[in-house]
Length: 565
Image 1: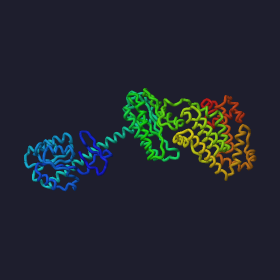
Image 2: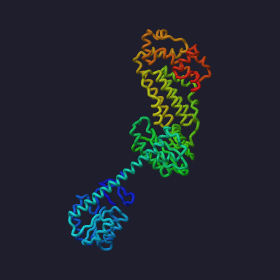
Image 3: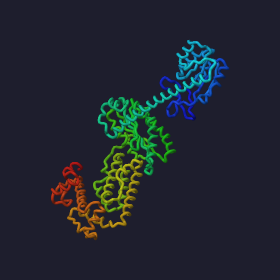
Image 4: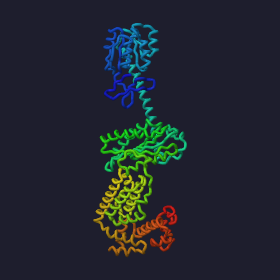
């Protein structure tokens, strides 16, 4: 059928048994001006009908007049009217024949039969083959208008029913798609425990997985850490989701795609190994991705692809591999596609983070040696750039360094609001190159520490720092509040209050904490027996040391060594 959509972009589709049905861009059946054709072998009758009705007022448009049944049929095929008003007796095809032929290709066309014959069998045949009404000549204006209004009402009901079906179908499709996405989310959040039975997953998550080949694709866009607009990222991720879902569709028998954090993750099931063909297709898509720069300021996209598995129960391995492949971008900042099978597998972070690194670094933090801290961060980055470690190991080194920084900031910077480790992890995910990451980290930490130092310039903090330095240097000896307060130039009562205010702990608690930190280090990094560890951190009574240690950590020294050594 032919519908006018008021300047809307429109498309032809088929719905059920209907042919040539017109929808708008939202996918709904549209009706504005209904198209009308008049067919009668008498020109005067056609002219009468044409001028009898105010077509525009009835939301109708006269699109053609013919005087022959065959010509009428040809015009119907070409113009696809909504309503045909036809005489029952015409040359070539009579009205009944015209209805029969039209209903075969356009079953929802409405017919009004006009006739000069008041014969019951004519009317019966017309109604049988689908006419809406049978009107006698001479036609009366009111009678014709009433018939057209009934057709309009009936057609409105039809349009509404079709759109309701479309809405229901959309809701079902949306529900099924969300359920499929839940499958991927449940794996990512480790909520699924049974991956052995593919049929169970299909039933539970509205999927259609089949035996064959399985792999995961992760698509990560990078806008740089200066762009942290959540709405911008969501728009970009939605565009990438749609783009890559369409790419994968033609190569898969089933696929599930979801936006996860700041990436698009696609789990693909194919009945043959399509890896090579799919990679070629993804490479061709790079031109489309480059066009995103017209919308987003300087966006880069990296695609990580897992190995191809034949075993259904290795879905989690596939997801983990694709995410690891993405992490290898830091060593290959100009890469567009990173295959897990091409990634190195060296993951020994101890080659970069030496045994005494944490102790030394915390010492720099405690003394607020800003320049040395910056140098150490850059040094770690340089060592990583020269290593052959994989992306996961590089990430672990970064997190180890960040945790050390955050631990020191928490313990040595009082109430200063230094960012949590989660912030540094988020920034890492926004950057592509190792050089960029560690350059940013060094500059950021230096800036924060400098700001902290400036904030403390107006406060009488130096005596407290000296006291803390003394405690850290002589924690294994007997240290009294009176001695340290005199050493830094305060009376004991004022010093005790100042110390608690600046550190968040009282004097004795701080000494115990320093001793416990050193005890934990000795327990995990040396083979010293428990008695020797206790003596090394200032306790001669092993029972008392164990009691204090358990209070601080929740476990006794032996258990701690077994758990973390």
